[in-house]
Image (cartoon, rainbow, N blue to C red; front, side, top):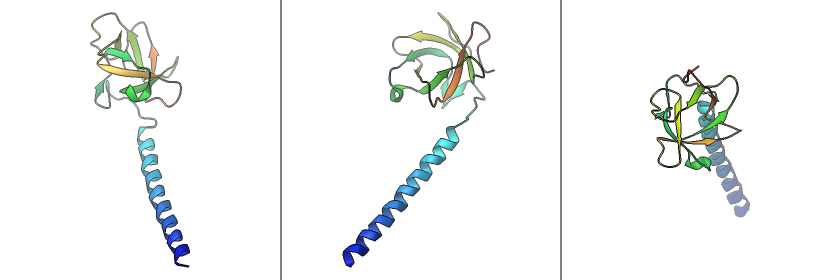
Amino acid sequence: MKTITLLFTMLVSLSFVANNDIKKDISLVKTNVGQKLDSCFFNSKKLYGTVQLVEFPNQADFKVQIVNSFPDLKVQFVESFPDKCGEWQIVEFNGDIKVYITENFPDFKIQPVISFPGLP
């Protein structure tokens, strides 16, 4: 009988701990979902400069999805002097920001443009 009581107590306590962890994870997801860009910074990283494309999401400063309409940021790819909001220069090494391109669950969406980069 003591064994059953002990097992029941452990089960209840584990479910309580797991439930609290899930609530914390859900609150983090709610704060990041639908986050709009209101300046040319995201998580204290500037959204212009030299950009290194990375292979894995855990290496990136942020994940982006390329779209044709309704972007969060319009990006112009330049050859030099990426010093305005939305101007990105792709480099192989030592980029100011590291970006992972994804199809699902991006931090924000970008649209490549020829002119007028920045926030829509």
